[in-house]
Image 1 (cartoon, rainbow, N blue to C red):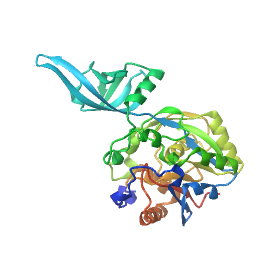
Image 2: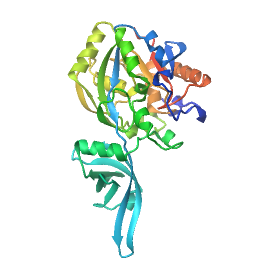
Image 3: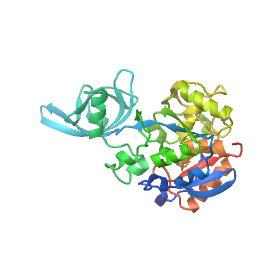
Image 4: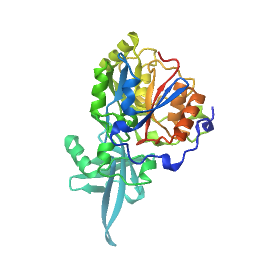
Length: 352
């Protein structure tokens, strides 16, 4: 299985830099087996039915991009340096792993000031990542970060425009609860409260799980032999209540439909025994063609980067040729791609 098997050509003008407004006006490609239908997200009730259960990732994206200054006094006088920081994940010792640019401009023990309320000291460096100790914790940290930070837009958007105040709203789901992600579960960005209530009224149920999406989600696959790729790990939790809800729906014959690849990866991690159970920890599950799905019957997801592990995941669910056909249709019909783009509902033939 070669990396080139998951490649495709995409015109730059199909990469969305802003989301559809309103959220539910985004287009929705529905692929049921080998049949493709063009819809909009607000048409989702036409494709779901009573007894279906949507699995939602309730992670909350933090404004992980920070711009600060490092001040230093030497024999040559006072100097400052501008330091750009991208937070990656909290560590057990209370520090944050982060990317610093330029890292060489900061010495161990030096302070970077981001705002009057937020600063951090460089504790140590490991594997090219800085470990920062912030001056505040808890709610004070959350509030200071919200004021000083910018949303961590994906590289393909950040290359086209800087993050702004609107991204604090656009790059967050309406059901976000638990802070810790540095990338959004983007399929979930298409939901608003009205659509959730409409689905609930028709008998669709919801289960929330948490997977803190890491910056590694944007890392390219660098090996030609797909099976030798090493996945990044992300922290997630499926509560006992969530596992019970999902298993009850499976037993009753309902469909389990994760919203987003993050929710799918998490519930399949919790079901490697064949039956989903409560689970918490770091998952580096790698889903590629030949994978045996134990929980997911379908998937709602955006359109993914070529040669990415997420292309491998959707190919595992639908079939490699089927995904090639789906993406060819999406490109021909000028669907908008990636994090702020349109969405798809993928229902494989094996789904009930």
